[in-house]
Image (spheres, rainbow, N blue to C red):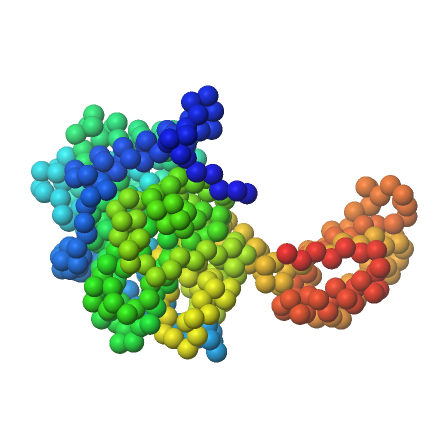
Amino acid sequence: MAQKTYDPVNYDIENAESNRWKKQFEMFEACGKKSNPDNISKITLKLQDIQDAHTRIKNDVVHTPVIETKYIGKDFCNVFLKCENFQHTGSFKARGSCNVLSSMSPFEKSKGCTVSGSRNFLYAISYYGFRQSVPINVIVPTNCPIADKQRYRENFAIVKVHGNDINEANLHALTYSSESGSTYIHGSDRLDLLAGYGTLGLELLTQMDTMDAILCPVGTGGLVASIVLAVKSLKPKCLIYGVECAAAPAMTKALQEKKPTMIQPNSTVADSLTNTIISNNAFNIIRGYIDRMITVEEGWISRAMINIMEREKMIVEGAAACPVAAIMAGKVPELRGKTVVCILTGGNINSSRVSRAIDRGMAAAGRLVKFSVTIPDVPGAMAKLLCRVTEQGAEIKSFVPERAWMRRDIFSVSVNMLLETSDFNHAKVLEKKLSKDYPHSHFIML
């Protein structure tokens, strides 16, 4: 599906879809300006800001480990994983949220905060709000999962439901903060938020004696911008690559257009990266210093999630798997033999998404295939079919015979099977064998 952008110059007031994009664009700028008292496009993040943030939050956030992988990148490069999924709230958002609240004055804390935005940000801000005695008002849309709302309430946040999507929730959060006198915290473009994220880069420099490249997921761009500033200031030769899902290449588009440009993201397993536009401050940092932007397809993201789960024994969300997906997909041939750090940004993923990602990843890797065939409905025919499948070493995940829908031959049965194989090569061998025994069968691989 082609990506759509909003052009304020050629905006057609009669076009309903353009009107919707204009509203979102204005909402984004309004949220940013409300969140930052200074001009949103002129704030300059400095290394000293990140160092101060590190001093401020070092005792309240997890000094997450860097783990050398056992299998990922084997025979290609040395891959290390920076495990932000081990944070108290399961993602790197803990760093920025903790720094924002720690930087507030006692008076501001007493008035509380109003927030809206991504799941990881809301969980982090409610977690640290409770621990710093800051009242937190969380505004979520009607489609917010029940489990997410419960997690916010467990940290004594006041959850208010408003709007049909995140954009409407953001607009209501702005209004509510003005009416209540609380501080509105924008979840992506505040100076103190970015400074908190940058502490991850400082940690990496103390943990890795040798580090040739860093691969970081990119959503609104706050994390990668902060890492770029921290690492490039102290280790300028270290390469820093941003990795986006192909379904929502907001940063790639912005760099092409030389300005933040609104896109229409498609659905993706890396749902926390589906942003319509990147942050202004992040863009101003990134455009001059990032070495490369990479996009990865859905199949590779799901395969990376499975690889991390099966090989490295960690469950991570789709966004966190994007850097590993870039390596697995062969997107970084120039890093052969190098020491590469992949940022695992978070592990907050619900069980339904885990099972969906597993199925998608296995299908993309050729480990899950569909087979359908029509056979005579006579004794022994099904047993023969099952033997043919198992003889080739495939496992039968599901087996569904259908008789009622047969039109031409009512004495036949249609059989639909879901089979697990070792890899693409095994699947091809299985397809060749079954096609020979059952010429009119259908074999489906992604």
